[in-house]
Image 1: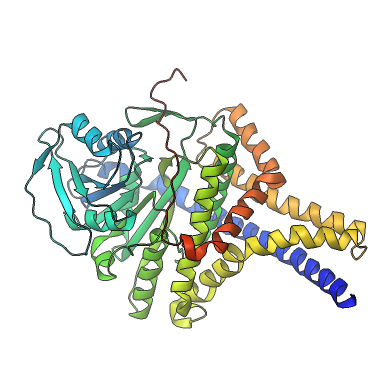
Image 2 (image 1 turned 90 degrees about the horizontal axis):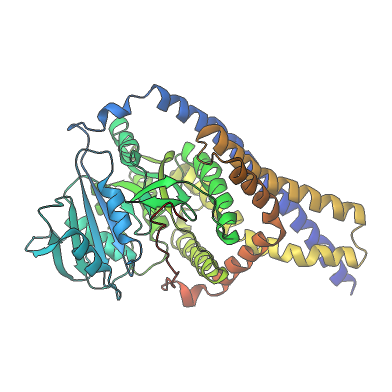
Length: 471
């Protein structure tokens, strides 16, 4: 029995130290992000990127939109892409064997017809059933293919694409007009760039009209509102700080741009996986580091992609479980890079960080919620230490969310309504009182169901974007 009490005491102490350490690490990331973000904003103020918007000298780009059962959002998505401020680009929508009317809606809306277009098979994919185009909308190419998953759809889009740079964007997402020019400027300024990611923000509750976001609002859904705080924290702090070290491991599948030849060199996107967005980035890092080639993989906080977040607990559960399975799968696949000096900051810092904090973190935090109260109830932990721990943990966790909101307001100020800002502050305060614990449970479920779910995406319900201002 003595050993049992000792275990509870020591393990609860470990959980306390771990929780405070992880929150201190995240707050340190935020400080790094502040300097990097302000440096970027100063650069953009003096940049003359706008004069390149209509320039014929800018790099032409292919936008690839993988679509599976996206009938509710695909038309708005394409309309937003047609309205982009960029001179030369093509929109390749890959209908990945949808079972709904995704293909028919695109054909009907944009007057597409079947054409005979040869395709160079740089990457192996499922068979293409047909390619559709229209003389009225010359930018649009619809690729209808057998179902093979998102990675397979992206590879098919790469095969069809004509230009040296391609961007991937989810079918339930909307790009801001200047997003493409800001992203491709990195490839112009730094030719060694192989990948660039833009920030992803949530459009839930906002007004989308003719493919454009015309009124930004906080959603009525509490689940979606909590996620706005999460996304600000993840993108404005986490990814910004890792990008500074050229060691970012994920460019969101919702919005990223890539050097096509580099992606083809590494074999394209990994099929039959649910973490293809992380896999392609680690794969690029691995090849470039191994061959000692100069390269950059960057994240920018300004080119914005608006997407939809789950609004029900079940959909949130499916998403977070899928994310954790994808993370686990990739960390296992590239474990050989761990603590290897030749992989630089990726092998020595970022991969250990993801193992320690992103993968194992939810398990330790969950066990902490059990063992720390047990230590107190059994008299192994006095009340003052118990109270101090929870206050410190709460303040550190909340300070990160509040800091991200403050950073957003100082830098981009997308939320202009005082009421909306106060709602964000409220959700930042409430996040650690139930919502965070739920997402931890979903992530642990992902770890437990790793073998069974590593090839299954699951389904999340989509909603139509609000089409008019009479919400």
